Length: 365
Image 1 (cartoon, helix red, strand yellow):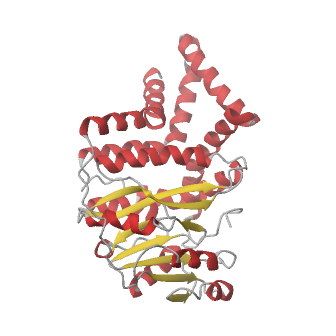
Image 2 (image 1 turned 30 degrees about the vertical axis):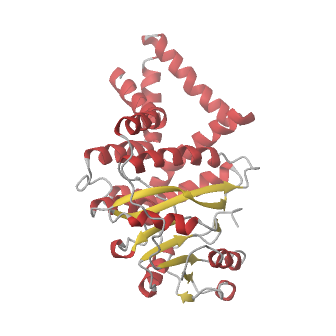
Image 3 (image 1 turned 45 degrees about the vertical axis):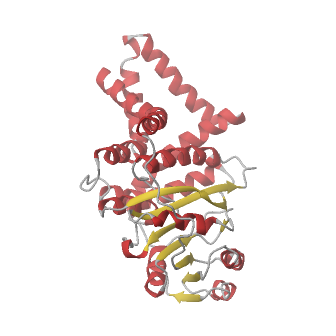
């Protein structure tokens, strides 16, 4: 029980607390890799927006794409389900594909098949890019080793209880360190691009955000983060809404972990394998580590003061999460609910499987 307590607690502390400063220290010691000059690098680019029931925002998204500072940009909107309102609102695009309902990644694949760009960029319908975002993002591909690049998304609508903005700033810090040292271990659907020659279809019940970066690494490319390429997106206003969103996301994430090749270290450098283990596997396993720590703590309560202190700390976290008072309480609630969502996403996948379709989270449009 002592071994169970110390190992599970140490793994939680490593993935949630110590991994970030360890990366920062390693980056300082190792230094950043040289970057290829890309100021005048402007290959042909196609921007793809997969949309499902996006009548409320698609016209603004197309206008935002048209305003991007990039020569000869091709814009394709792939309308999953082909609803008339979204198709009509997207008419400012170069191509509007009215597709049968098949899911986001099927729609993206269909758009890639007709795209003309050497670089394929992707964005969500409710994401607005800064005017120079695409030009900045594409410069990363001046380095022939780069196959994938994602930008920085900032969340608006922070008046609600959701603490995703705070978490995401921490996540972006981790991504910057990983990118400088090797490759990122995960991307985001709001702002990213891939080299056309490196694009690979993924299982439609999985997705690009988690699968594409590590697959690029396995194929000999780098997956990088470009923080200067900026976008904004409206986030779910409540913590409870974020809990539901992350639960849904992890029902797509667990198949990638357990069946999609993430666990297979073939093609990883030792450093990247450590990043995958620390940032992905241990992070997703955190709810189970918490349960093991709690059980061991209860069994060891009479074995020393340290276990009583550990029990009090765990109980305090749960009480603070239940009450949700003030900023500390909201952060505690966010942590507890989103950690539970990781395990519930696994439950949903094992019990019901995962469908290729998706719905926009409430309050994000």
